[in-house]
Length: 225
View 1 (cartoon, one colour):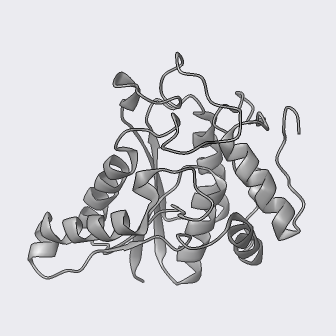
View 2 (cartoon, rainbow, N blue to C red):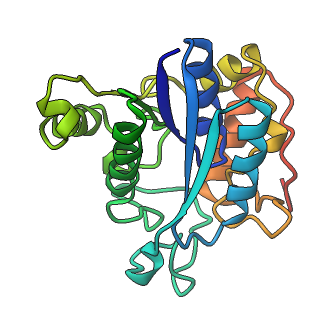
């Protein structure tokens, strides 16, 4: 059975990406990162999703991106914005996050003998992050095949971003079809310790809008809606 490493944050998108990889017949190895995020409760959600979707192994690796700060998600001195997003890259962007995450996933994949990596980035209903664009995914795939022993010896790494062109509603509809229980997931940038979402941040707005447009009941516990 072919193996794949799936980056699993515990949010809606990564849970759907994991379900899609499983549907394609991969033996799934889930990787979550404790990177100093203020919404660390998402890691508990990642564990729940990994258990329910039957991954072969789930690793949670600590990395201290909060040592650098520079993001509302890793620095408590920077407020998570609660107004509608404007132009430009928002303060919830975490510098180099997806590059660091994919690099770690690539290292594990090489050890496992896996050639496929999945992540749940999305370029339609996204928040303006530069590392969620198709050209970034293509560039990292080229790097993966240049910078590894396996790549040099003829193995071909593939970076899968199956949600890249989907709306949030389409993602939710796909997940529902694949049996994803979205009540297990946490997307909020400032969820409390029990996983209750603020209902005001950009991630909450996109998630709630996605459920409305998908015609699917939203199972998210919100502080206010």
